[in-house]
Image 1 (spheres, rainbow, N blue to C red):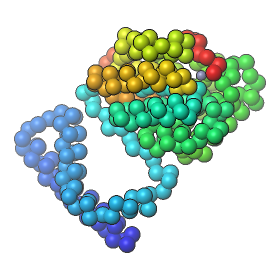
Image 2 (image 1 turned 180 degrees about the vertical axis):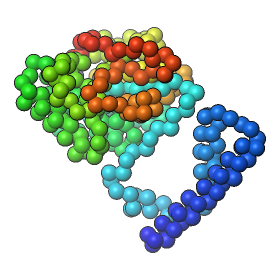
Image 3 (image 1 turned 120 degrees about the vertical axis):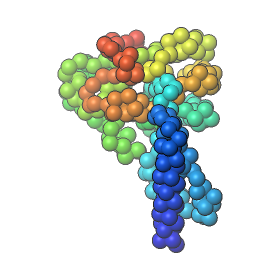
Image 4 (image 1 turned 90 degrees about the vertical axis):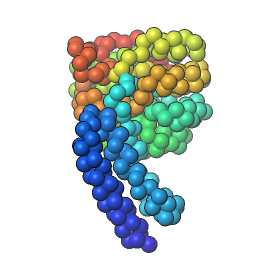
Length: 298
Ligand SMILES: [Zn+2]
């Protein structure tokens, strides 16, 4: 049975490639150019032999793919702006679940900077977030002021949380957002992954008001922005019901921080602080805020 399925898949792949090559040749003759056109055509070509895939039994996929199968990668249209929504201090089961529904309904993805104490008993919602294509990242075990800790305590807060996320997702890079955005040279010497700050502060934790959160996003959003929010507040999720569809209507593509980094920089570097990832031509002298606005201790 499995051999038969593999053969079928291989046959489909060959058919798809043939269709792609044929179409590519046609396009060359037609003289169409540009990255967007190529992307569009390749997607179309792969879809060409679709009717045959119906012969595969529907349960095959769940049987053959392991649980740790990497989540889907968001396809990025180079003609539209790209942003990363980020949510700190969770998970909080009810709020995070509702947010995941909104993200899924809008074809959007987000990055969750989770804390160790909130993770206990909420592993399932984190796993769901990951499996639906969102990114799981570290906000430390206990949300301390890292700069006031001993070297051993820093290692425990960062390394301990990193390992918990690796255990759930199996991912190689675990982005870190230090609590309050605070690091210094000593703390950064303990960090083995990219450091993610933000460039749009919704002040959701302080104002707890849908209109004010939506207003901050409408006024401050830009191509390459990293947006700071907290999925432990129900008003933030109420606001997400408004601003996520709005962002989609404005053409914004909502991807994970790692996807944004891969798209704009070819990947993010360990130990480097990122507050935004603008398009190359507008990137001049972009520096993340050293001491961004205060964040709650949750
Ligand atoms: Zn926080």
